[in-house]
Image (tube, rainbow, N blue to C red; front, side):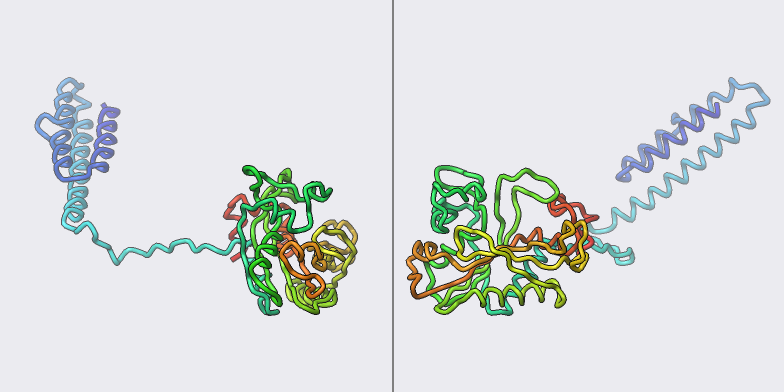
Length: 337
C-alpha cells in the first residue's frame, strides 16, 4: 500500500509541474482529488486492509491528499501570474545575463600588429584576390612554366589556369599594373599550398607581403626597414641577421633570422640549439618582374619581403602546434584577451 501511495505522489508531482495552463491544471485536480480520482481509489482500498493497518494507511492517504492539494495551489498561483503578464514582460528584479565577450583571434591580432608597425613607416595596406591566375601567381613573378621553383610554390588548381594563390606576391604585380612609383605597400592575406598538415604545416596559412618601389631604393633601405620591424615587434634586444638565399622574384635575395626569443640566442629546443629563428624572406625586386608590369628596370628599383604570420604568432606567443589556431578551442583562444 505504501508503494502505491508513493507512486501516486511522484506521478502527481511530475504532471502538476509540467502543466502549462489553468485548464490542464484543473483536469489534474479532478484526476487526483476528484470523487473518482486516484486518491479516492486508494481510500476505497482501505476496507480490504487488516483493522490494525487502517489507521496508519489512512493517515498516509490524508497526508498525500494534503501534499497534492498544496502542489496544485502553488502551480495555480504560478500560472495565474504568468497568464496576467504581457508576452513581452521583463522582470527587472531578476539578475542580468552577461553575454560572453569575444576576443581577437591570435592570427588576426598578429596581422594587425605587423601592419601597424609598417603603417608607422609610411606603408599602406593593399589586398588582392585569393583565387588567382597562373600569370599573376607565377609568370609575372619570374616563375615560368618550366622553372624548377614551381614545385616549391605549387598550389591547388581550380579550373584551367585558375588556382588558389600560393603566396601574397601576386598582389605586387596587380598593384604595379595600375599604380606608378614611388610607393610602399603591405599585403596581408591567406595563402594555400598542398602541404600535409602537422604541428608546423597547414594547407592554408597567412602571409604579410611588403613592396617598396622608387628611383633610388637600395638593399640598405630593405635592411633598415626590416630591422626596425624586428625591434618594434620582438623587442629592442632582438638581434637580426641576413643570410644569402634564392627567390625567383628577387635578386639578390636573403632570409632574415632573429635571435631566439625563447632562449635569447643561447640555444634551446625551439631554435634547434642554433640561437636563431628564421622569420621571413626578402630581396631586391628582379628586373623581370618590373618588365612584366611595364616598369623600366633601368629607372626604378625596389625591394620586397614576405613573412609567415602563423609562424611569427607561434614564436611570439610560444605556441608549438599550428593546428591550435584552427581548432576553435575556446580554452586556447581565451588566453589572448
